[in-house]
Image (cartoon, rainbow, N blue to C red):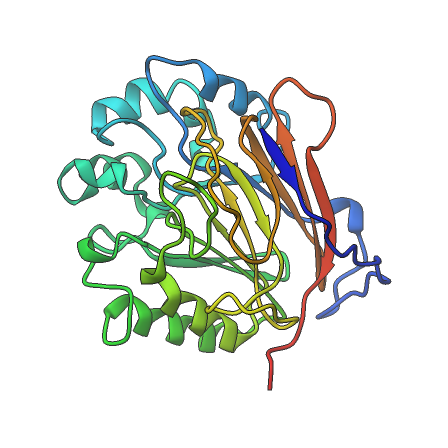
Length: 295
């Protein structure tokens, strides 16, 4: 079943070059991916991989890349046969299932340096004019996610060192989710607060095996034009979960489609499409402008 709530549609403004770039909306960088992906007993991850193979996009994962334990064998034999063919252009983040193997050793061994330092798993990179931040929401495994943690101190420092008009972040456990299995995670609220203060625009998570899009909001779930838009994309191939009572600011909920989220990163804006398996058209799409931080 699925539910759609009405959402504001933002008009496309004129595309403006920055830092001397030549306007080229056709050649904008693209992020594409999902979480909760591969299982050796299923070929659904093969189906979602087919949505990626004809692109040269940077691939993201929002955790739980392989089931059930994130072992080296599972990464090689299960994930490797599908999404593994994009390994050289994948920028992953770990989920809770990766930590079913001690210290997520299978995950860090498989992805190598693109996964960040073993024992940490957080890092950042630039894509076009955007700054991309990857965080590890397995808080108990990495010394916490809140004030006083190494990860939050790194996040503050990274955002100060890489000021950008447009910023996107992703991690596994969603701050907000209407999913009936997992739901919202208050433990990552500190991530949201620091990103909000810097003027970040987009957050992507997984964990709940469904697709959900939220309106801009702050860390407490209050609608805010200076807040961040969150996408939950746990639709990479593992079984799908249903929804409970919709939480505030949820705009669209899809629990019957496997697929990937594609985000085209413009200069000062972005366009998103949720691309489902076995369909020629997007199940959810839109455009939005980046914004300055709130005063």
